[in-house]
Image (cartoon, rainbow, N blue to C red):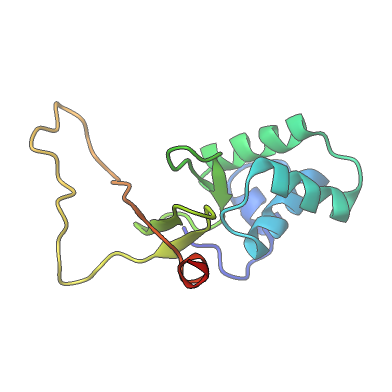
Length: 142
């Protein structure tokens, strides 16, 4: 579910999670800094609430991913990234040079080949597509 402007505390309660300072800080920081790494999130959260261990950040992210409040993506060769945009079928653009990641909505009126030829008994609910290339900033520096 995309999270819009509703407060992090509300989302935590709706997901059945305890409201804690680190959880609120992680969700609020991620709302402003999508596609962040654990290291980046940790730095940002420590600026807001003081001392929070890296393990605590991992724990918060794990709970929030399981609850559907945060999406985790890990492009090949890059550390895991986290974002608040969940519950829709958007994809990502990844720059091969700087690693910048941007959201891209699914094309409408066009179907990519997202249905496997053999589902092997699985009940499919999502397909992940990662587009690779060079971002405008890196391209202009070439």
